[in-house]
Image 1: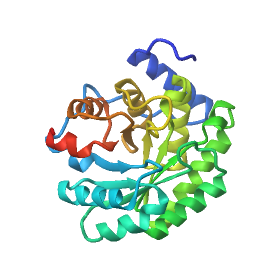
Image 2: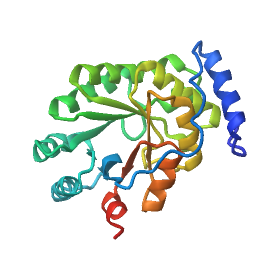
Image 3: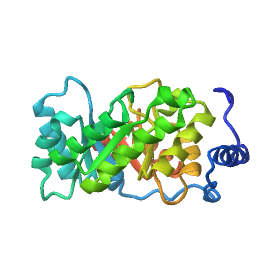
Length: 255
C-alpha cells in the first residue's frame, strides 16, 4: 500500500484485520467510538523533551526545573544526560525518560537492549526506542520484533516503561499497522509516532490509525511538531495519551 490518499475508518479496520491475520495475530478490538475526551490539565500527558545534539548542561537543568514546576510526567533526554536529570528530579514525581537507538533505529537488538539497560541503571524510568525501520521495509519482521523485545525485557527488569517509535512519516499505512502490531506482540507499553528528526512529525491521521491498532492496552504517544495547545488537543482527541514536545511550557501556559 503506497503513501496515497488517507484511508477511511472502515478501510483501516479491513487493513488491520488483514495484516494481523498475515502475522498470525488476533486483530485488536473495535476502534473507540468518537473522539477521546481531552482533559483540562494537559501537563500529566507531556514528556518535556530536549534531544538536540548541542543541548548543554544548563539547558538540561532548566528542562528539569520547568518539569518540576509544571508537573509534567517526565523529561526526555539523551542517554548522556539521564543521571543528571534523574538526580535533579528525585522525589519530584517527574520521571526521567531516555531514548535508545535514536534517531535512526539501526542498532542491533543486542545493542538496543544494552543501551536501554544502561539508561535504566542511570535512572531512566521510561525508554523511547526506535524500531529498525530498514528491517521493517525489508519485510524482516522477526528482526524488528527482536529489537523491541530486547528493550522490553530490559525495561521489565529495571522497572521502566518501553515506547516503540515507528517513525510513521517514513512508512506506508500497511507498514504502520505492521509496526504497531509487532510492538504489541513484543510487549511495548506505547507506540510512538516520530523521533522529531525524521521526515515528518505527529499527525491526527497517524495517531488515529495507531490507536486503532494499539487497542485498549497499549498507549499511543504523539511526538514531533507539537507546538500549541490546539495541536495537543487535536492529537489527544484522535487517541494520543502521551505527548512528546519541547513546547510543553507554552502548551500548558498559553505563552
